[in-house]
Image (cartoon, rainbow, N blue to C red; front, side, top):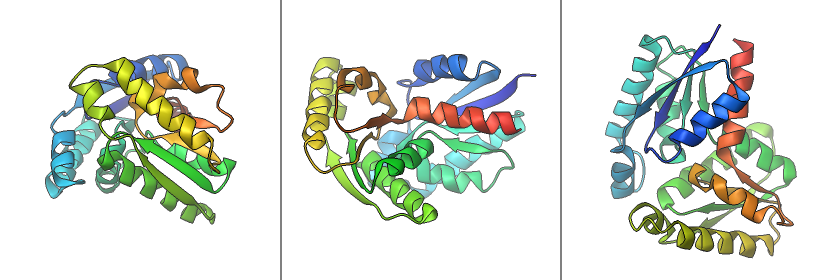
Length: 221
């Protein structure tokens, strides 16, 4: 029997990627999408999640539960902490896209470089790794690497090549440091992985790892 998975999106950017990944990894999942593109502008304007962001996220989680969700998948790291709060209000398993990436990063060592193009993604992603390390009883140092301007170049100027060049340059630079793993904080960067496969430091991005995590949860239901 197919399991209903509701994905909460903050933009359309990763919708097709996640659809393809679920089709490959968890074809038994029946996908439904809830998209609210007002989240990111509010988070950016306020430097983080707000009570209204939490309120809307909670409403979406509860709507998904009412619609028969077997699992709720949070797509965006910028609102991951709102998802943590909303998860407390439903009786449905919740998977955040970046949880598995944080755990895998810590398997490589204690020096992690986190690359993001938005400070509102960077900070909660760093905190997620730190919380994961604490839960696992591990020490960790997370270096914040903000590729300033790349987000606007991609989303507003639609210049994919320039965005990619900026992020890849940051990855290459971090690979020359003492980093044990390099994390790409935004799922929209997943298409860069083949371009840095020769990196001497492991480079991780969340969507595939997140869907693999969701598959594990679905298999236990």
